[in-house]
Amino acid sequence: MLGVTETDRVLHALPLSGTWGGLCIPLSTFAHGGCLVLMETFDPAVALHLIEREGITIWNAVDAMAIAVLDHPDLSRRKRSTLRTGGFGMTGGGRDGLFEDIVHTLGVPQAYQPYGMTELNALCLLHYLDESEASRAISGVWPAEGIEVRVVDPETGEDMPVGSQGELWFRGPLVTRGYYKKPEETPKAFSPDGWFRSGDLGVQDGRGHTIFKGRLRETLRISHFMVAPGEIEAFLMSHPDVAQAFVVGVPDPKLNEAAVAFVIPRDGEPLTEAEVIAHCKGKIASFKIPRHVRIVAAVPRTPGPHGDKVQKAKLRELFLAEPS
Image 1 (cartoon, helix red, strand yellow):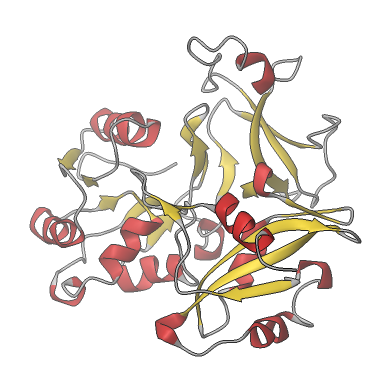
Image 2 (cartoon, rainbow, N blue to C red):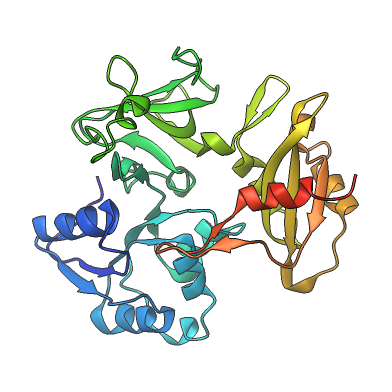
């Protein structure tokens, strides 16, 4: 599906401890006779240098790495015309238009967004490279060979109708058999008939596409709707003065939960709560519009091998600690 050949030169800067960096990238390169170019640690200047010097054709990365390269002053000075494809995982540190920037500014014409996790394989849902750019920008889509996937109601285990969001369940040879030395955790992760409960939210569109929407544990339950925070975040970042947006759910006596948005303005642009809410009205469903917006300079993050992760639990705590 991903078209790796013996002529490809693959830049590898992801941690070797995960399934993507430790298995998928090296094995797919070696199996097709390609050349693997390793980085000891990721550095955007070194990555651009290697892309030019080694004639890199494939680069796999996460959003934080792509942003670091796109924003680096060496970008315009380094040749990148050999770049062809690569998977770019959006782990929560992205920005509006990032995938389009990867394709058109960085110059990776057949970039795609995969979906996966250690328990399933990093490329559990992926793409054909001849799909449209709009399709390749979607996280997930086609199950890897041998993988079965369902979208179910996490409480009943019943299949959700086409177009309705639910938990992604998987079955197949790539799925883990369980958790090492954690016998109490393994049964919780599987249904009685052997489907792995991913803890992630997804939807099927009736055309064979399975699309990742967000983390189930972060899903907002507004009235009787399940809402992925990422949907709201993506829309908020379409505002020209919003650099990043992060949405959490807080208790609400009428709606069960209400959305609260923490917004980082772009380049210090002046921005108000009223402006952000006005941007949403009439453009997204009313129950998805944040009930509260906080304009902040930064958000709490936890450093990680794939980039810093936003501490959404801490954001929720900060809001709930505000004087009523």
